[in-house]
Length: 177
Image (cartoon, rainbow, N blue to C red; front, side, top):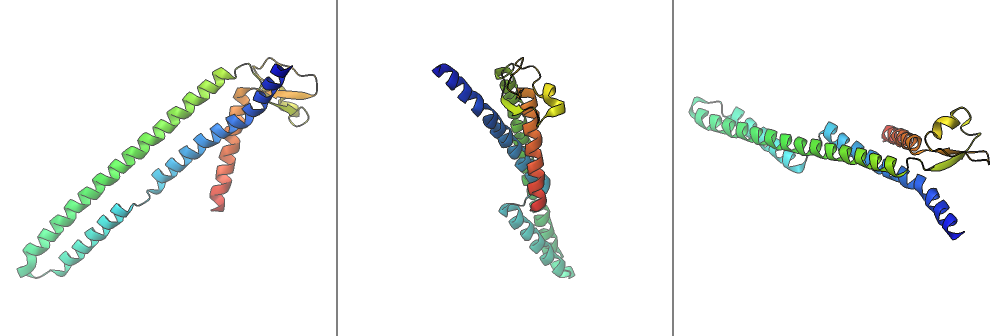
C-alpha cells in the first residue's frame, strides 16, 4: 500500500519537474541567443570606442603640414585600437557561440535521458474532456489505459507541450518588455 502511494507521488512530481527542466533550458538558450543578437556592449568596448573616437578627433584637428606626423601617429594608434576592439568582439562572440552549443547539447542529452527514463511511463493524466480529439496522440507509447475518464500523457507529448508553452510564455514576455 505504501509503495503505491510513493509511486503515485513520484508520478505527480514528474510532470512539473520535466516542465521546469524544459523551461530552464529554453530560458538559458533564449538569454544567450539574445546576448548574441543584441551584441551588448561591455564597459571595455565602450572605453575603447570612446578612446578611438577621441584619437580620431584629435588627428582631424591636426591638419597643418607641421603637425602631419603627429596626426598620422594618432591615426595609427586609433587603427591599432580598432583592431584590438575587433579582436575582443570576435573572442566574445566565439565564447557566446560556444555557450549556445553547450546549452543545446545539454538540452538534447537531457531530453534523451528523460525519454529513456519515462518511455512507457505516464507522466501526467488529464481529463478526457479537455483533450477530446487528441487523447490517443497524447498517450502514445505509454501503453496504459485508465478507466476513470482520464487520458495519460506520455513523455514525448509532454516534452513537446512543455517546449511550446515555454516558447509561448517567452514570446509573450518579450512583447511586454
